[in-house]
Amino acid sequence: PERWSSFTEYRNAKLQYFSDGGYSWEVTEEDYQSALQKLQAQNMLTILLDNWDNSTEKLGAWIGDDHAFVMPEEPANTHKHSYVPTEEERQQISELLSYDIRLYDALAEAEKARAG
Image (cartoon, rainbow, N blue to C red; front, side):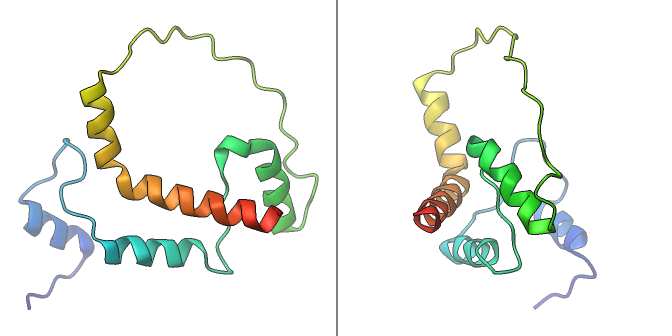
């Protein structure tokens, strides 16, 4: 096997150059399992942004200061969001993010089970 002095050297050799077209190599089930194991480790804090209020409490408890992260009320998003992706675009992004979605769902399910 070839030896690389850094991940960047490996990636450059593998891809020939950096691409702005998204990630450029396949993510495997082994990669997914490895990421999930790391994210569920005892020394890892995962925070789900769709439950931000509870997440700030969790973060405060993690660092030992329950009052460290009292967040002000965020104003509503006032930007107009007129673009609606096509079904094909939705399908493409779902495929690209399939492992990310699986990781998030697994962590959300674990969080739900812990909360009880």
